[in-house]
Length: 360
Image 1 (cartoon, one colour):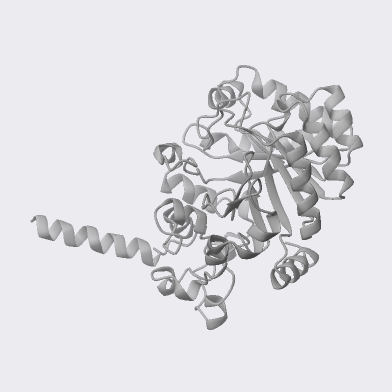
Image 2: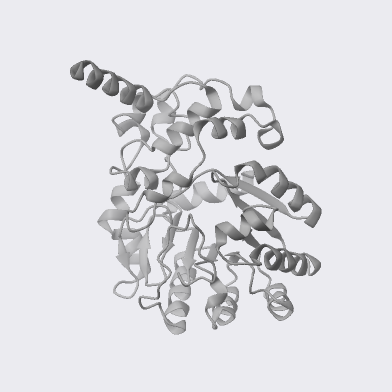
């Protein structure tokens, strides 16, 4: 993170400003990705006028970074009307899309409206793998063609690659594809439970061995000795730091107006169809409860040597049953990176040992 962005985040947190907001304009999608955490039916999306009203409220609240996502944003025929209104407020707009519906005309409008960047999901450089994940034949070809169109118009594109068991071996090929296209790329080894609480899709995730391989790939992490070094001693300042941006400088709004601390944190805090956004942001008991969390008060994580460098997601912990508890997926990342088990992993191992002893 740049010094300027760090300064903006720090200032926004001190002033209780929602610096960044993700607004999903629809859950409908033309793909059916095997790992998707959303329900793709339309249960009553906000209208264009409602969304314009929300954007007006976000601007008044001080939001600067606006991410428009879905589902697939272009499933809404009025998407460019939404985008145009967002740009009138001078939001720094980022768009997440599979890009399959971006033709010449759409690429022109995205350029003309001055979006900051467009993130396109690519799961493999091999059509048979990518298309099997999206369940849309020809989707890789269409996405790549759209990336070329956007790139030709000077639009910044970022390829996002979620790692799963069925595409793990392809991430070097996706990174090579990104270089050939002249765009950036990111890799994410996290599979998120469905928003309705269904955790079955977590079985699609990569194992600890594959995760370790990613964490020790110098082409991804740079200096392995530094990146994979044992965690430093825990000091008092670390225990009082903000755990993440959720509810502090960032939140998420669903297509139905529900407001959550984060897209990976489906804790209801209010609905913009019933309350003003700023009232939810400032006064929601649930939002303020999330805001109160500090590492010091976490029963298990506060005792862990990884507490200062862990990527612990309170949303993933919430979906596992307790937002003040450990996030198993993040414990595994810390272990894969350093080879040192987290406090939670050691606690679980001790419990399993005791159960075995009792059984014997």
